[in-house]
Length: 68
Image 1 (cartoon, rainbow, N blue to C red):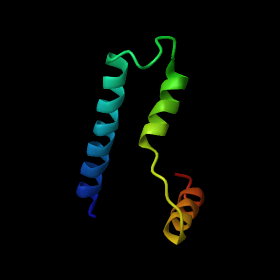
Image 2: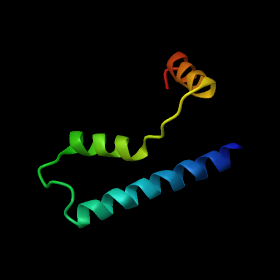
Image 3: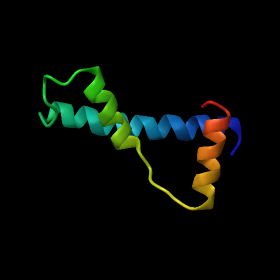
Image 4: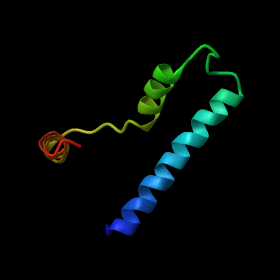
């Protein structure tokens, strides 16, 4: 992927996560007393993508080494 494609992918992915969370807030599924901490955890959970194997290990190593 080139940089433009990467930016578009990330934007689309985050917009999808945002739409799901906003819909859950609007439907009353999210407690009103949740603050930024709880909502950050929710964003993290909703955007999490599992994985394992060599590629995931290489990714984790790259993120760690490059302080991402």
